[in-house]
Amino acid sequence: MSGAEVLDIGRDALWLTIQLCLPALVVALVVGVAIGLFQALTQIQEQTLVYAPKIIAIFISLLLFLPLMGALLGAFMRDIAARIAGI
Image (cartoon, rainbow, N blue to C red; front, side, top):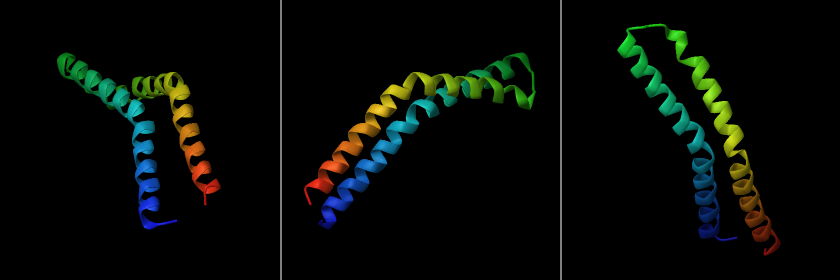
């Protein structure tokens, strides 16, 4: 296996990590901004108000995006297995 192939696999792994994390991070960002805006408008400065909605939203987003994440991981594993078989 050459150095270029190793770098290609590493690049693919990093891109896959970004794709897997992105839905949960975007949902957490949107919910956090919405709750922050709500707190600023109503002047409620409760620190624990952010955590429960954010945890629930991330859990729901993970349930919704789990098939996509599984498909991405499965395709990556098939690609890695094909590369191993080709050696």
